Image (cartoon, helix red, strand yellow):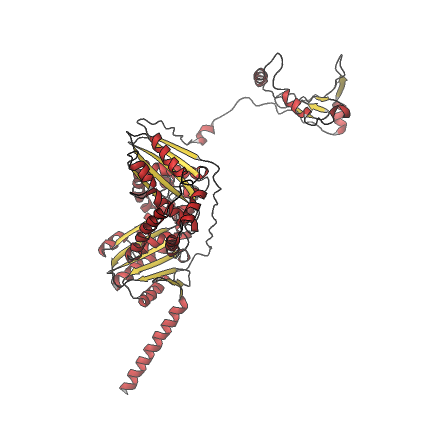
Length: 574
């Protein structure tokens, strides 16, 4: 009897496990797998990336939300970054997140960028720690306090970040150049935000921003390190599966930046001891094939010590350093290069060498040797990242934000397969002056800045205003044909053939309106002279033999009067 009971229990347990497995498969779908990373998807739209690494002793949980500074509206500059800070302030189930992170020995952070915001923690690889981390991220996805008192306390932290950037000449110049380079797109705005927007954002706006974008179908969860895949998937389903999306569907309607019409220039005069010249070029999105070609061109130009700009400027002691930056973005991006020039060197000379080197690329193309060196350097760095599971989790956020995590591998393959012809073709296409914004930072001991204050208390300004004596309301006039005929006085001016008609009525402000029509020429005289009358009429207010054009303008202004002329074939009207 005992044997039968035991067999029944075993069979029931196996059936239960099979049932749970079928349920899990129904709720978590495998989507794709590339080089050890596997994507799954929950019914609520949450994407889950798993990258097991048994050689690691840690686990990294990284969650990326597809929202960044690109999604901010008017008055919201810096909101995505401010929200990143607020999400660390706690939830009902995790009221003191910094304390919990410290107690677990976790290495955490959060970052905000143009297209995405991510949060991650790396911790010792235990089941208990993994359960806690997934519970934390699922809870703060929808239950973060985002409270007014936390916002007020966090202002000082974000303000310090903003002010540290304001004290960096290179950062200030890059922000100024990017802002000038973009007419409409938010890539031209700094992720750190606008000081006044940061300080004045209503808590209700921040809460609405949080509820709009922090949701399962707008998030990608990535787990890397030492863990059991099946157990972890079940845990993810348990923590995130019950979370529902808001009823309002997310729609991403991009602003399309128009092509730049000519070279732009930005000059900053601020306190500092370092001169800088920089240049920004508009380039395609990270998913575009040309992005890989331009990444190699950037490496060839700025690499230390082999880069062309490095050799032309640093080796010759015209510059103290060079760096460049190209964000891997979802929509068309930019390539930015910065040249530091010591105060005892010539900024103008450095700029000439800098821009000449860039402009001569078309006639001095990248060589096969330069291509191979750049590819070797870039592929080495990528290989080192792909071997580091704890860093790979956060590295993938850049490609997730740009559209999909698999772009990391596609970008690597494009670098590996890139040819010198494709690189030079991309250089000729994008490295042109009309696609460029040049920046200069000129240290100035006492810069003159005009701050324009906002007008306040307009209500008080206008409250007791009485104004001047009102103009006479004038006379109501019957515009019927009969009344006009009865009122109209007709005649001919003495000693002329000029006919006139006068209607007298009281106008508002005692004004007089005069229309004068002069008929000119006949059919034969006006033939093939269609524009002559129009241009002649336009010349009538440009001065006379006795009065200059300015004399006439001044007299008319003194009389608070205006005269207009119009001409057409057979008629001139004043």
